[in-house]
Amino acid sequence: MSLLELTNVSKEFSVGGTTTVYALDDVSLTVNAGETLAVIGESGSGKSTLGRLALRLIEPTRGSVHFQGTDMLALPAAGLRQLRAKAQIIFQEPFESLNPRMRVADIVGEPLAIHQPKTPAADRRSRVARVIDQVGLAPEMARRFPGELSGGQQQRVGIARAIVTEPSLIVLDEPTSSLDLSVRAQILQLLADLQTELGMGYLFISHDIHTVRYVSDRIAVMYRGRVVETGPSERVFADPQHPYTRALLAAALPVDPDQELPPARLVGDPVSPTEKVSGCVLYGRCPVGEDRCVQNEVRLTRFDADRAVACIKPGAPGS
View 1 (cartoon, rainbow, N blue to C red):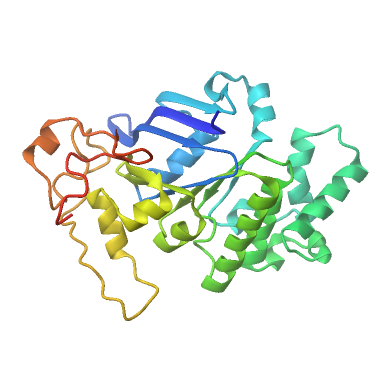
View 2 (spheres, rainbow, N blue to C red; view 1 turned 90 degrees about the vertical axis):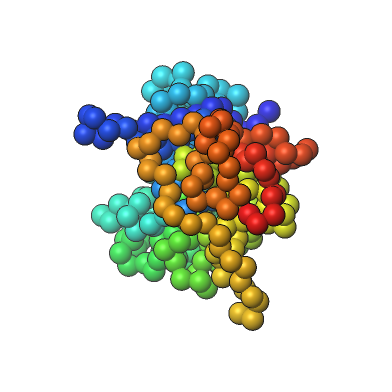
């Protein structure tokens, strides 16, 4: 049984009462215990919406969300609160996610007060101190306010707050994008170490190809609200099948400054998120697109034993 399972999830937002934004369109994904599923795509592809839907921070328009076999959409408020102790989130901007008027110890301990209110105060303080140490913060940091910490230290506080209830799943929404490179590497290593130690599943949302390659076991590539390719990270990076995946990889600067960049072949502008698309969402920008791509429904289809692609010509030359 998967830790998290999203099935045919769609999300539509009404803007101004007359316009509909199609943020997610028929997305199905799973996250297993102890693995990292990375969701990657450009801004506006629906990644953050997907992460919030996974925790029922927003409600889907259609589809189902199951966590450890439980239908999250059927849970009443009390049941949802109990479940959220096991499913947490780490946000992109650490300072904005922390209460500037609370000390670090109180921020980290707040989930325990909410989810485990009967825990004796001494036990709560002990667990908070242990978690603060676990994320690499000095004990004296517990009495500081967020504004007295660096960006990396603030994110460590956010991580401590997320793991203090011993969750099974963490959604990481661009958790290192606001940090400089040296601090980013430290936080990624911390997350990897915690996953190994605690066995958590990660839904890792990012637009950074190099970060995703470093952290993920599997990858889901999103474009305009749809998943267009999924598979083991090594195979997707070594042999991408969807034209959009190929363009993402071509657009990323290589680690080796002398490596020649392949051309990024997409042209034109993305389809507006207010336009309902039945065919391929990349049509009009795709170098191998044909009329049948827009005339027929193009959905994620099994490509081989462990990969799926939403393309009628996967791996076509020139893409």
